[in-house]
Amino acid sequence: MTQQESISVEYLDGPAAAQAEDAFRLVYAEAFAEPPYNEAEHDVADSFRRFRSQTRKRTFRSALARTGDGGPVGMAYGYPLGPKTGWWDQLTQPIPDDMRREDGRRTFGLMEIAVRGPWRGQGIAGRLHETLLAGTEAERVLLNVHPDSKAAQAAYRAWGYRKIGEARPWEGADVHDVMMLDLRRTAS
Image 1 (tube, helix red, strand yellow):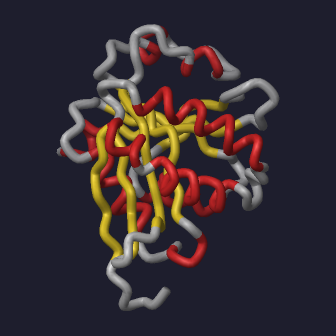
Image 2 (tube, rainbow, N blue to C red; image 1 turned 90 degrees about the vertical axis):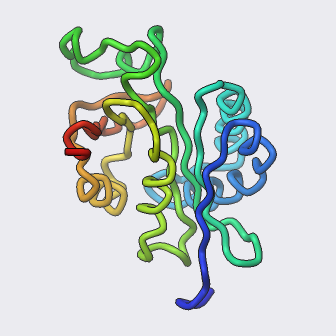
């Protein structure tokens, strides 16, 4: 990779992301094998069983960054949270009912965003984030981030996210910070 190399970022809907699963998987496996995540192949396999289900959601959105020759560099994906989402139930402390209210449009759940090591520090994650959220009608974005992932935490704060709580996103997981971005505030 060179500094001169052109990186493209494209928006993909669910069917297109499903077709590009190998690219998403490569980025995910490489990025999340690193500390503090330390994910093994079985963790990646579990994540991509969920990915296949998620890409079938009508509202699924994703962004994929590639080199000029098509090599995957970074990825991001998510979808609006439905009225029966369990996301809020994972918080370690209760929050007001009005904050929990979901209708399938109010909150975009950012499930994953990652950039492979050699391409970090070039603004690619920001471009993925912008592409993913362009045109969304959501009021806010919600994500979980490992508290020891200092680079991710710093990027999210720079993009306007604020910590609203802590959660254990799946059984056996470390406690993660829950961060929210108010899209109405950033648009004004």
